[in-house]
Length: 237
Image (tube, rainbow, N blue to C red):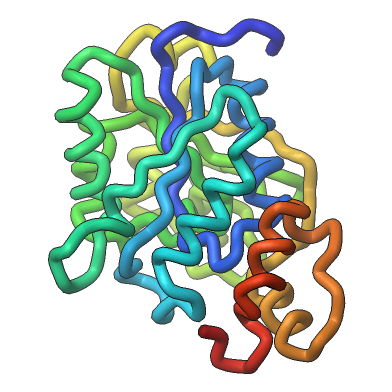
């Protein structure tokens, strides 16, 4: 898609520990495929369903800021990182804040990888998310959105081959890119991305072993990691 829909905002949250080129390709290709006016990256404060980040929230935010500094059409919401409240940060609360910020009528699109969507039913108040945003699921070969036999074909996930509550939502809500601008929330839309098998875990292991992560993370992020000696020990800083 070559045109961007004015007002349709993509929201892409993550631990970004560290931000890598797989994250950026998903964000870039989502903007292009879905015609998003802008994509806002939201570094997680203390994610509820993941291990404690290896790197401080301040460092993770700084790496995202450096990666996006020269990339037009992208912004950052630092609210989770800067929040003083203790305890886990839940996506539904983040999206409630985004909805208050942008008003009731602006189309908001939550961007998810297929593996994250496969675990969607474990999320806090997951059904409430559909009243707040559209959900766009990034698919690739072997990780496709399906209806009727498990919402996603993702090897090794419990959703494969069985009907679930999420299946019912996919069947009722699955739409197309054209649906995103027509309503503020409520649709589930798949979009294909380039398959890149890059993980933050593997990058951290390489860095801890003294190996190069060049071309796995943006140069500005790698320079920041090097200057602050992040991830250079097994436990990070």
